Image 1: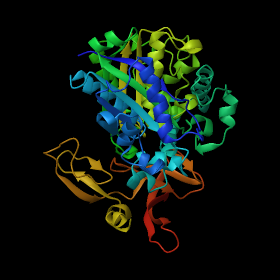
Image 2 (image 1 turned 180 degrees about the vertical axis):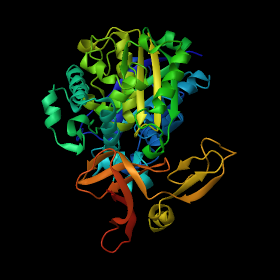
Image 3 (image 1 turned 30 degrees about the vertical axis):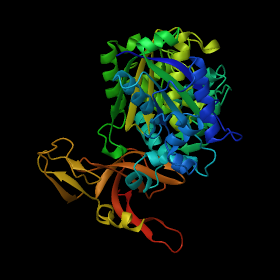
Image 4 (image 1 turned 60 degrees about the horizontal axis):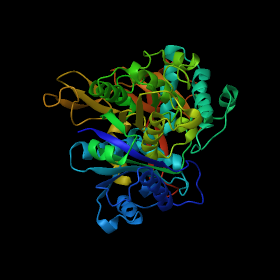
Length: 383
Length: 117
């Protein structure tokens, strides 16, 4: 059964000091319902991506909390929280997709939310996505592991810190035109290179921020979608793959096997080649992660990803624009909300509603990654 | 946290991992199932080699954390005690302190690596 996205909503991403976990969820959900003219009680089920309500705000059982505050507990609508580190949003989207594709539900909502600024050590909490006993124990956090990948990549392929910096510069440039973005401000290569080291060779401006934010999308089967919506965006494929959790267990540190597996499966199901993708939102939690994504998604050969950024191919107007929203780097990374936020951006792009950051594309791809790549979710959308 | 640490002591202190007698692979940390052989796998605990090389590294919070390629092909992540390191540098394991649970808590020991010349 074909499944479409018919409504999208997203809060601004950033340090939302004046807003609570409860309020940002509602903001995104109501925007998505209004977008497709639904009241809410038509929803068959709620899937919420959230990495760590327990650690960030000391609240578990958040799916029920959300159903309650959305007024949907009144109708008994089932809600479930999906956790896959920062791939929670993408994973929730996939669960929602399967619920409709299977015929179980006609209309469902997939949402993502994270409130990080109410906690003392957000990076420490994000780093619970890596192996606690064999990686965190020896002093490695999430940036340290990506730094180890980056150092090896540069050593093997001759890519430079400047190449990585270009990725951050490009994403900041795109975010200027995104009203929901955390950093709507251009930066220069020198700004990145002169920012402080977080984990050598990665610097502050190689890293996505940790943000508050929520996002929501409404999915429906084809019949319902055509009734409710003039501009349904269809899900051509939504795949997920796993890799070894700890880096040390992987044969090749420079390939995210979960990304290449999930994307190969997605291309096969959607019956397309990577060249046919007109726009992509990828998981640039660190600049090196975006570079690996170029290759593991099949946009460049292994070791040649930097060419795409040097030659402007991944800019808006290039051959394959990547992260027109500003990506995690500049739009912000609200952990569990990110995977859904990527879908929101691509739906706007395919509808032609992306304003000054509009890209001309018929097919779009989203890549949401958990931790250092042990989970990857790939979604292909089309007009 | 004490039992959680205590259970791993043997594997941390001596770098004991798994060797599959069916396919010859070495795994660190120890595994219960050989991912290659599945049901045909024969995993045994084995003390891993003392020496390896630095495959990659970072400096974070003032410490050098490196991916070490052990001489049997397995990899391990560990702190390296040295002023400066580089990719390809030879290292050997050393028993060292990693941290402690506050002033009155237990001390966490484990394996770090030092340059082996």
